[in-house]
Structure formats: C-alpha cells, structure tokens
View 1 (cartoon, one colour):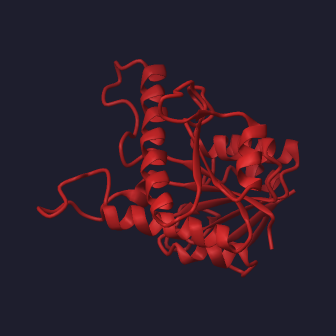
View 2: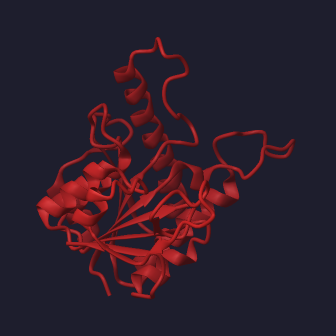
Length: 239
C-alpha cells in the first residue's frame, strides 16, 4: 500500500458526457463531480495521504486563435484548474472529509498559497490537498505539475488517469495494433517518446527519484483504488 499518492485528475472527469436540456453546461456535471469526489475520499479512506493535481480541460483547452498570447492562454488554463479544485473541494466537504485548495498563485480570498510544508501538514492530518494552478508557470503541463508536486511532497507514487488502458507503443486510437506496455522505466519512456504523459514529467521523476508513476484508464474511477491496492492494471513506470 502506498503512503502518499499524487493523483492527476483531468478536468474532463468533471464534465458532462453530453450536453442536454437538463444539463446545458459544457464544463460540469454535478453527478460526475460527486463521483470524482467520492473516488478521492475512498482513496483517502484506505489510509493513503492524497494530493490531487487538477486539470482544466473541461473549461479551457488553450488558445482560441493563433494570434493569442500563449502566456495569457496558459494563465487562463491555470485559473480553470482552480475553478475545478473549488468544485471538487465543495463535493469532498459535503462527503464529510476535509479538503484544502492550494494554489500556485496568490489567491488568498479563495485558497491557500501552495507551500510544500503546508500541503504535507494538511495530508498528514487527514485532509485532501487539492493542488491547483498547475506549476504556476506557462509552458508547463499539469502532467509536469503532478511530477513536480510528487517530487516536492515525497510521494510514493504519481497516478495519471487517461482514456486508454495505459502506456502503448503507439497511439491506440490511431493504430489498432498498438501494444500495451505493462512495465517501463522512465528512461525507456523518454527514449521511445511515449506521449501518454509529458516527457518532461518522466524526466523530472527520473531525476528526483519519484519511485513510481501509475498510468491507467480513469473512465472507471474504481481503478484508482485498484491501483492503490497494487492490482495489475495499466502501466507501471519507474526508475
């Protein structure tokens, strides 16, 4: 059993599968937000200290024109992850569990400014640390932020959920003969340019000796618990 896990939760996890008259929002589905919160709480209830890196793709997915300043576009994406973290915090608290939103930017009316020791203290007292705002820098993905926080917070594992079953030797959505790789080192993933996760995230985990990245399909959120229990699902990337 892992002691401390950094979970990368995509914004799409919170979004509706389809927009309807009953739920016209393109960004949030109340039932899916609650489902994600329950999965996080269930993970914490295993006795695991949990930090969650929030994605923002349900709200913002980059520049809407090539003329747009990419730094501003990335800043908007950081804000989207904070909106998502607040939504998940609310859902977790309604389940009776403590949750603290930490942001990489000063936003003290809404959340606490991220500092590693404060995030560790929150997790050690049993609260869930919702780590929002990415790394705080443009041109850095939330995959990289997950690796960075995993290294800073001395996590035993970084969990990355995807829409496929793990790391493949090529894109399974384009190549029906793509093969699932069950076990791979960080260096092999970098050398083979396997893009299921930002290569800079693999590089950082290698350099800072983060023990494990687990990559698995998060369409079924129960897979989070299966991975935490050590079941053989998805891909294990390691030193």
